[in-house]
Image 1 (cartoon, rainbow, N blue to C red):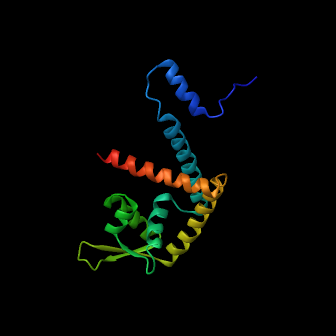
Image 2: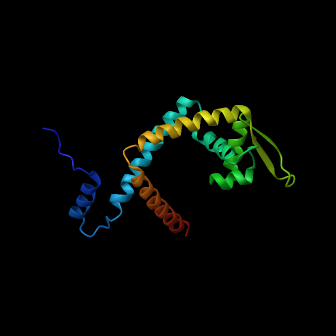
Image 3: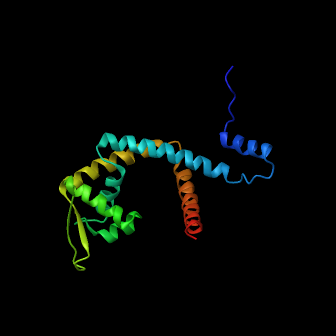
Length: 171
């Protein structure tokens, strides 16, 4: 006979810690552990979908921020860094790689010699359109078990938690 499994394994994890180390602060286990597990599942699945679409996550992030900016799909590297929450160095590397692939172009910005404007090319536009559809359609199927009301409630809770955790970890 196989090993019996708890209906919700994190409850069993928290109980085991309490049994083995009474007083251990386990109040986060039933929240953080499933979030970490889900993040891994979503991340692995997204990576697979992106591989099939012929794009990596960093390039999709760059192209997406340009696409969401609206026509004419031009942003400064500083604005890209602000919107993607990555360093200026990482943005520079991403832009250089995407430019070599013909997905974006770079030009001196209007703000002066230190400003660089990045423009989405037709090829970049076409790739981001295909990639975003593939990723988002897949992710909709992954959350299909949640009702509209459950999705809205979860989105509010996650936003609240994210905002608070971000503030606490910035200290």
